Length: 253
Image (cartoon, rainbow, N blue to C red; front, side):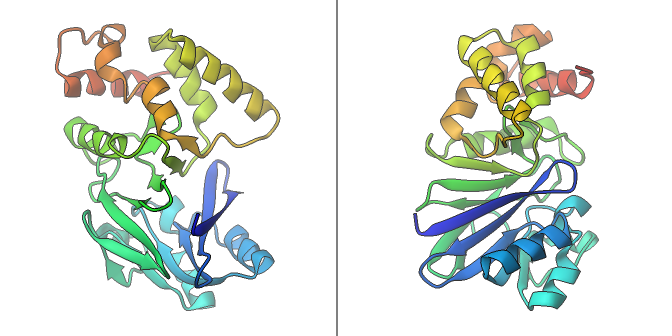
C-alpha cells in the first residue's frame, strides 16, 4: 500500500483515522470526532497534518475542525454542509478527486444519513472511508435523506471491489449483529456474529471490514433477499430496504 492508516478510539464509540501518504509523508485526518486523542496520536506518530477530510456535518465528525486547524494549519476539505457546524476551506462533492501527496482519494456522493454526505475511496489502495453511510453489519439512520437516496448510496459503495477495506466511523457492530440475526439466518452471518461478540469481549475493534463480507452478511445490503423477514415480500428493492431500516430504528435488542 502507498498509505499507512492509523486507527484509534474517540468519544464513546467513534473511531479516529489518520492517513499518511508514504511517499511524501503528508497526513490527513478523516473527520474530527475528538481533539485530544487526535492531537495525541499525531504527536506520538510524528506526522505532519496537512488536511482534514470531513464526510458530513454532524458534530461528532466536525467538532474538532477549528481547534485542530488552529494547532496545525491544515486545510479542511469536505461537503458544503460542513459549514453548518464547523469551518471548511474547500468544498467537494461526488465525482471529484483530491490528492494526499501522491495518493488519490475519489470523492463519492453517499447521501442519506445527511444530504451531502461523502465517502473517500482510495482506488489504488482498496480502502474507503465511509463515515456514517455504511457500518459493519449496518447503515446510518436517515436523519436527513430518504430511503431511495440511501439505497442508491449503498449500491454505489457495494460496486467497489470486494476486497475494499471499509472504514466506518463507529463501533456499532455488536448491536448491528444482534439485529441482523433477527432477520437473517444465513450461516455466514451466524459465524460473523460469533466472531464479532468474541472480538468485543476481548476489547478488539471490528472495524475495518471487507466489502465482500458486508455484501454476504450486512442485512441492509441484502434487504431485497430478506424482504419477507421485514414484511416487505413482493415490494421493490428500495421498499425492502426502507422496511429494513424502519425495523432497525425500533429494534431494542
